[in-house]
Image (cartoon, helix red, strand yellow):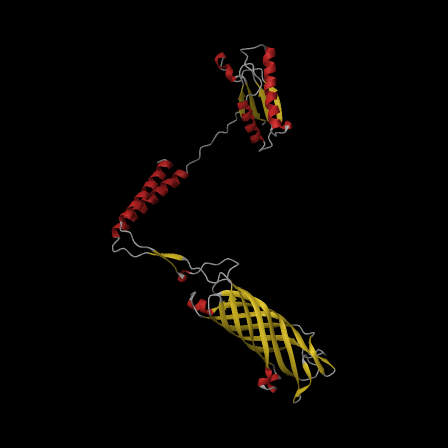
Length: 403
């Protein structure tokens, strides 16, 4: 069976299956977004947000237990920009500030306040500020599935950052603002964000966090690499930029027909027939491809009336079209002038052959073809050599590619 007949048979079978379905009563089909099928990833510019937080920090260190609990709280704050890459995973980056109050064993430790002691310990007060980055996981969407209208989301995160330390500066015994201490730190942090959606754009949050830090020292170097930490609580507000939600795949919901056994049987037969046609088509495509013989004839042939060597307007358009083809490559061509040997003298025919070939060459060069790509020649024989009745086919210029 030929390829065309196989394709025609497949088309007829498909039209038959369509008419088969059309014979059944029309069923109402609805389309819905189904988050249970997963969600589609948004573009990079979507699901960005900005968050501002303010709260309190409580210092944790070995000596700080000797300071009253109420005297160990300090302000803390953060501002972040971030993006949710999916309903479950996101990231945020920003700047975190937290104040710390503690105790030191000697007067030379970072942040020691002059003339302020608790028993044998010296009070300290300093602030840490620097860039931070967190990786976030929305546990609610992970465990319970994504739902656009959900009010509460629990988000856990872990991250790191770098802090530089600000301490109280003194002139004599008088406080004189804050200065940067030579005490840069690395911090690791983790926490839980309790997020409450007020609207699609705005969410309020309670952020509970532990931050571990490393690097406090005194001026003599003692105490370097002693670890300490802080727990913080922040109230925050988040603004979500468009696009804010996630698109679920659209799935059709089709009511089940009362009884479609006959339809299933007929469709099964159609499937079997299609499989058979596919097999025949595969066999047909596997047959050897016929080799196409390349045409080695001239690129073009320009014909002339008897005794004429000038190009007519029609032939000028033909030559310009040939020039356009030649300008698409860098091949060389030979232009051969011909005249019939049944009319005119040898001198006249010699002049006609030469003038015809040179006339085509001039127009090709004028049309943009480089002269060094064109070779002019003449041939004293008859082009067609079909006899005196076909002399019109011998008055010509042939244009052939140089092999």
